[in-house]
Image 1 (cartoon, rainbow, N blue to C red):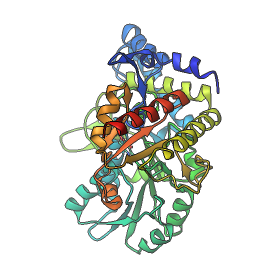
Image 2: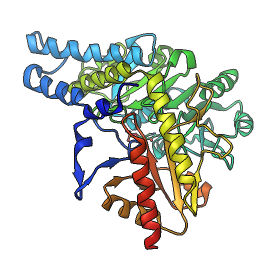
Image 3: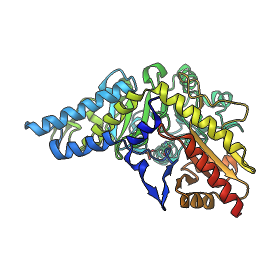
Image 4: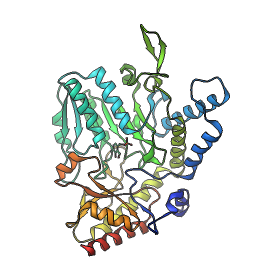
Length: 417
Ligand code: PLP
């Protein structure tokens, strides 16, 4: 990896202080900071280009359209999709999954049909299916996890039935850091003729994703978690499914011809992009993805693996430390190797009897930003028998000194209790 200090300098916010302490930002699972190039790209587009896309014959509109469509190509290449027809811009992972639940659900799911999710899903990969259950009477089945925080694949195999219509599963858990073996899961599902949606919110920033190699049917992720702007995300879908799915929302852009009697719909991907998209954010996302590519996943994985290994070693030295996921016997956390699973740079923990909220609040006063609570994964909290955790989640710009600051902070808080 390039010099870490050089990389940090690309992120202006990392130079600020909070409560007169240097900021130690360890909440990257929630959102990542933005490099100057992304901030500049957004400003530059508003200063020099701004016009609505796809609708204008004039210069600015064509320029904005070009940037928007080039962003789609960047996303296609980044996740190794076959075609830009398969890249739909959404507001984020949540909207992407809701789109599939509503539209795939409308086309392919009927009363009694089954969708399999897992015990470690984020609410955004649970609630859309529950809404569909209320509307259509589908059945939600849940793949359990082991005590080590891994998916129980033998149990998953048992959940398939002739009524199974979809598996919806996180690539990386936002609580445990577990990288699920999505490739074998997709192979298992396809052997039952069942398509698979992968929630890639926590994977795309950390490991190279190849949707064609994985052979997933849908893949969702958020721009803001991969150094891009808020309000933009992606749904990848295989054309064969997207072609058969009805529009999610109606409005401008997604139509062919409209009359009061009959309306036809636009081609892919526009059929799923009703209304004015956030074209500026799409361009910002493309710049963020180019930034990530310029560093390269080999370097990012090696750096994050190093930081995570160091953090696990140091955290485990703290008396009363309880880490969820990251089984002890795995000495070096391995990021995903071609969909076979591993561990990512998310570490959830509790210390003794200290409430997660107290620990997070006191760390904040030391300038250390961690997340506390259930992390939008309440069913997983129930499985673990806890109400919440403290979560440190590392990105490509974090350093071992920041891990040291976290450990020293936890020690200080421990002494107060
Ligand atoms: N899925 C996972 C695993 C996540 O971690 C998150 C966000 O934390 C989401 C989905 C939802 O992402 P967004 O809020 O960007 O739509």
